[in-house]
Structures are given as C-alpha cells and as structure tokens.
Image (tube, rainbow, N blue to C red; front, side, top):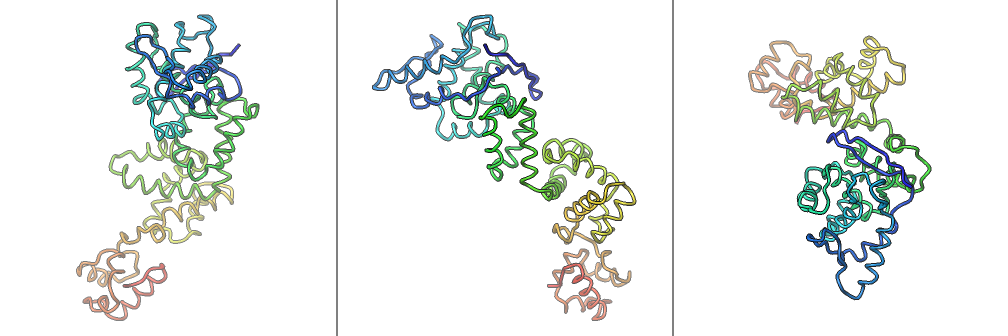
Length: 389
C-alpha cells in the first residue's frame, strides 16, 4: 500500500499530493507505441481503443498501465471520487493530441507549475469542469495530478508515485537551474537523474536538489559566480536601474534566481555593494586589484582567501577597462590640467571613448593641447590598455 505525501506548492498556494515508492513507470512507456489508438469519448469520459491490427496489443498495454493505478476505493482515493483511471485516460488523450515537438518539450520541462496557467488550464476547461461523472472539489490539484501522469508516460525517468522524484522536479529552484545550466551541464543533470532512478540514494527531494547544486558548483568552478555577477550587473543596468528596485534586485532576485548556487557569495556581494566597493571600481576610484583587496580589509573582515576572491569578483565584474564601459568614463580619468581638459571638452570630446576615436594628429591640434599634452594623453591611455585611433 502506498504512503501519501502532502507537499505545498509555494508558487500557486496549492497542495501537491504524491505517493512514496521507487521504480520507474516502465509499464507506461509501452503506451507510447499505441497512443494514437487511445481515443477519449467525452460522453463516457473514458478511453476507447480504436479498432485496427494492433487493437489487442493496445488493449493489453492499456490494462498493464492501468494495473499500477491506485484504485482501491474511497479509502485510498485522495479525491474521494475515483479519479485515478479518469486522470490516466485524460493523460493518454492529451499525449495523443501532442505533436512530437510538444512531447519533447514536456520531457524537458517536467514542472507542473509551469503549465498551471496554460496547458493545465486547458485540461481543466476541456475535461474537468465540464465533467458530469466526476465531481472534484480541487480542479487545480487534479490537473496537476494529470500533468504528472503525462510526465510519467512520456519520460522513462519520471514516476508520479515517487515523492522524491516529483518533489525534485517541483522544487522552486529546479526550473531556474534547468534554464541556466540544463544544456551546458547536461552530464551533471544526467548523473543526478541516474541516482534518482537507482533509488535509495536520497532520503528526500530536498537532498537530491542540494546534491545537484553541489555537483553543478564543482563542475562550474568558483569563477562562475564572477561571470554571473558581471551578467547580473549588466541586467540590472539595462532593466532595473530605472525602477528604483536596487535592494530588491540584489537582496531577492539575484540570490534566489540568478545566483542560487552561490548563496554565501551573493550575501557578501550585497554587503560589499552597500559599502560602495563596486561603485568605487566602476568610477576608477580604485584602480587595481590590490586596491580592491585593501578596501575590503579596511571595511569588512574576511579570511584571506575569501577576501582575495571577492576582490577579484569586484575587479573583474566592475572594472570599466575590462567590461567595455570605459568609453563612458569622463576625462577626469586622465591627469590633465584643468585648462587642457576644458579645451578638449569645448571641442566636443567629453569621454575616453571620444578621445580614443581621435587620431594623434587631430588630438594635438585641439587648441590648448599641443604635442606635449597629446603625448601625455597617449601614454596614459596605453597604461590603461587603451589607444588612440
């Protein structure tokens, strides 16, 4: 007899019901061979088998699949209305109507929450709400249960009876992990899924998700956080900086979505942001990696290796000379006399990007600049890794 596990879906404030148990739905994989012969009759609210040369095999596959359902009566039926076979029939009808591309998409996106306001809503409107034989009181939960049966038929990995597997896919962070790393780190995902299939490796879905995160961190290396942070800075400036949501972005969005593998680093980065480290690097108040490290030592006590790492994070992510934003820097980055800088700005050249678009001869001919100052500017630019046109 299956044990019932109750999970809470925090996205949609609904209950997820799952059954403990190991092993995959091998009996249901055979259904895909005959799925085109399973036709749902709306008036009867059940599947019939289309007559044809494989009708008998289709019937046997259907019965074998049905045999693993929980149909022991109201005592074991969580909905109290005998919906297990009905859900099974609806799942088959849904798959029959899917294209191969749709089936592949579902195999790669097995989180019921993703479909709640889309495909699952269609299931509720087409099958559940119009039903005259099944009077359910939680249509949302029934549609989620149908989606899990669809996953179980389409995927050799998914087992709707296994609370660890269903919980693993329903975990809040899973969709983000798949989105960010599913393609480039397929081997890591495959390894965790193999452990899930084997059974007995994890005592809970939470443990499986944490193992996935640990393995991804090992595969990606410590520099991955620096890459994520640099990309998040760019995303913030392009999409959020005008919305006055800086704290929300770095305290909530960044650690929960973009840097979910690096909670400690996210926390430290937010502290350093509030201390002004990243801004100091952006405007070149701090002009070297060593100056970043000294800034951290003076303002925040971190152990040496971690201080070095966060200093490198700030320098590589925020340094305008490496992230391409140097073109926007003003002329105060150059050690020029006020009168010389003023003459250059009057000529219409107000940023380092403007200066680097000039030829040496054109720069020297600007009134008040001359060869001596042009040589000085050229040398300073070269020290920054920049050059005149």
